[in-house]
Image 1 (tube, rainbow, N blue to C red):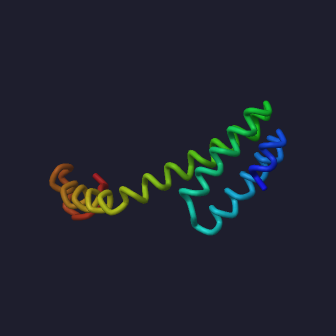
Image 2: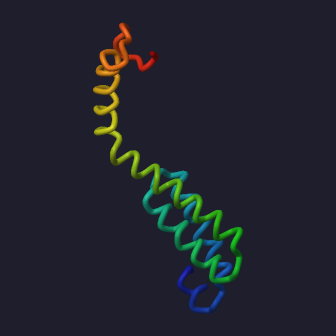
Length: 102
């Protein structure tokens, strides 16, 4: 369907299809695929000079990109935060271990 819309030059409709697909993918938890569809939707919207819709899709893609990056680093980040929380008392002179309050 998407390819048919693009072949017919119906870029606004193709953008909406991409956006709706991205929303469904995001809701289903397929964040990487959703991000890619938001990017594609943004490109089609921008090609039709629909900058508000294009920017909205860009923002959605960016949010997913950030979430994916955080998820990828989450395990290492948790370990780093644990170490920081254990070191903070000695660094800041706090007698309560595991807090950053000074």
